[in-house]
Amino acid sequence: MTEQEIDILIIGAGPSGSVAAAYLHQQGFKVQVVEKSKFPRFAIGESLLPRCMEHFEEVGLLDCLKSENFQIKKGARFLKEDKSCHFDFKEKHTEGWDWTWQVPRAKFDETLTNELQKRGISISFETEMTGIEFHADGTSKTTIKTSEEKADIISAKHIIDASGPGRVIPKLLHLVKPTTSQGNSSIFTHVEDIKRPKGEEGTLITFDVVTDEAWLWVIPFSNGNTSIGFVGPSEFIDSFSGASSEKLRKLLNLSKHYKKRFENSDFLFEPKEFKDFSSSMNALYGKGYTITGNSAGFLDPVFSSGVTFATESGLLAAKLTARKLRDEVVDWERDYENHLKQGVEVFKTYVDEWYSGNLQKIFFASTINPEIKKQICAVLAGYVWDTSNPFVKNHQRLVRTLAKVIEIENK
Image 1 (tube, rainbow, N blue to C red):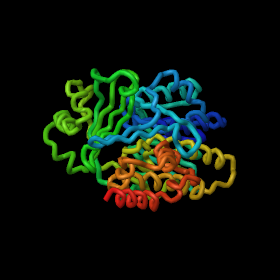
Image 2 (cartoon, one colour):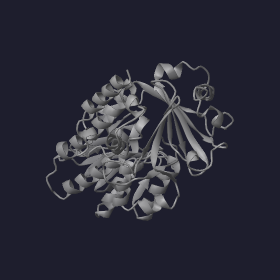
Image 3 (cartoon, rainbow, N blue to C red):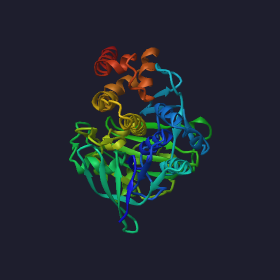
Image 4 (tube, rainbow, N blue to C red):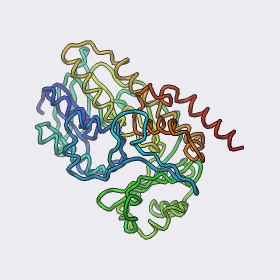
């Protein structure tokens, strides 16, 4: 058994861990990334938001991503019966990026880790944490096991847990708490999009609302394949019998907009099911560690917030860790936990009000004030920390009030 001494151990090589590693390496720290999987590997979270482009740009990861020619995402479309609502990221309240990408995450994440390794950042794939000991001063000793069953010790001054659904430290320290969000499930796969329309229609990310609570995502990729998946109450998804592929075929029959487009498309892998996925943590930091990305919490995917929260938290955790290791005073509650929780609470309002029906009333109203639409669009673009936006600052009250006004006008 060998022992390695480093500055920061990062658990997980997804977008959150990659952004954190890139920043800390830029700052001259010795970083070790430990990743349980072998890349490339499948991951959910294929629709990005403009906000996260700022994070990739700041740590110098934009050029390697641009070289892959991922599908450009300029906005998002929502369909319900014969109604349509389209948000254009150019028409938003908050200044910032007005486009992002739709990505097969296996390729996207591998592109990031390849770039990190080119820079000399050490990444151990197929490696698991088997034990961890935190010391009184916040340093730690972590036992890891490689695919060759070799055990090693890593001594670190700080740990950033970006392990995503693995939630290594949250599970170890019993920090996971029950969610108060919708108890939804999803079923999804990729298809060869043989009937993809030409032009812009074939590139649009679309959310097709098939019932008030259930919806289909359609995320076209630049490689000719498309991600499709249903989200809805667990009992609704489970009411469709059969194997996963049969269940998803039955669900596709509910979509009048996409049934014909995908009826003869081959599923590129057996559909995956993800049940009761929303989660949150009792604490996002502790002495010697910070929890980021989907390890910190995961919301319903209807507004594609996952990767943006991952990179927002990864970059912020890295910046604060750098300050801590330089013996600066860091207020983790104010500068990290409160910041992230502010953004999560805004998005959670929009998720909850989507399923309450209030947001759908707004989206599918016959008319909507252009300024209000710009303000809502900024939220959907990921700019949920801009309190100059009334629909951020007063998110709970304004969404409900506007829905009530629309309801009265329609009577």
